[in-house]
Length: 506
Image (tube, rainbow, N blue to C red; front, side):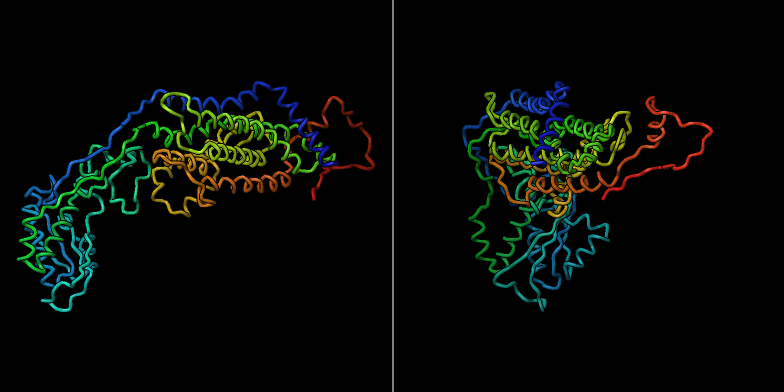
């Protein structure tokens, strides 16, 4: 009962403090709604386009190299591995004839390692369009191809023929490499990828000549088995490719606003609340109120629990209405989060609020007055406006490289609550672009790591706050010179003198 009575008194104290600054409380509740309103305004102003019919594409041929790779002045080479087999050389020469004058010569290498060493050290390697590497070992020169042929093609790491607009890291569809690690782009929009590109766009399997070389190698292998039968068959057969049709869809560029701006708006919506949390806790410490309550037998964990419950109640109200604004259709253009489950969105926002409160507690534990993360102020917590934004900065460097990070690197980055929130909001935007709802995947999902961040911030808060009593220099002198303190008599010798008293905590 004593604990319940103390906890009730602490809640009453915090309630009175908030009651005396009712405007601050209203701003804390309304600010997240304001930033949610920004997305609603964007949702209303950004139009969408309905494609009621299936998207169909025309077929295209891969019999030759695409323009401008097919020009004779390039003088490309075609490499082949291994170079000790005459049948492989004949296949390479057949590919050369099929692809036209752009391939001026062929060059063989004994092993794939020799070819890689040539590419790294010889400047002439830039003239190699591709390498055909057969995954078989040939013991003598006149050995024929096996019944089951296995080969792979080697092209330059950086595509030669990519459009200029896709050679920038700021472009989410950048064409710096072949994207062989991804089945789909990192950020997707409703509808077919590169809707108006008949050959499929990035990665440039057509415009870099990959499809043409592959088709030419396949025909050359057929001729190496039976030149007469293959010639008769190929003369009556024409191979063309066509992009797969796409069903009716709604093209909505507002998905980009969710993917790019939702994390930042969520951080900004809690910046003022986090500032007030740091300021309230530090000011109480500065006025020695916490020390007086500790002397009266107050437990440390009750003190933090009372503060946590008060701020969590306020943020719960905000997050509930933010979820409503995000998930309810407020305009003909649709809701901000059309496909996401409102319950999942609410839980995600509440967990982020809990992590933000605990993170603010941890920041306040390190300071006793106007010193905050990297600034000094005359009022407690005055620099707290920076700590939340500074913890968001790592995400700005991780976001362009998200698909290059390993799972361990993403998990390590999510130990910062704002980074975990940003990656979670990014996942919401990615699934919105795919037209589906994000599904919880346990602790492997970045948003779920917020559940680990919240208690992780409690440990330094509980360890640092009692260990550092934060005694300011000059406090004793100020106390002795107060107007209610009698001055020491002059000319007398003290019998018993207490000098620099201190208090030790167990």
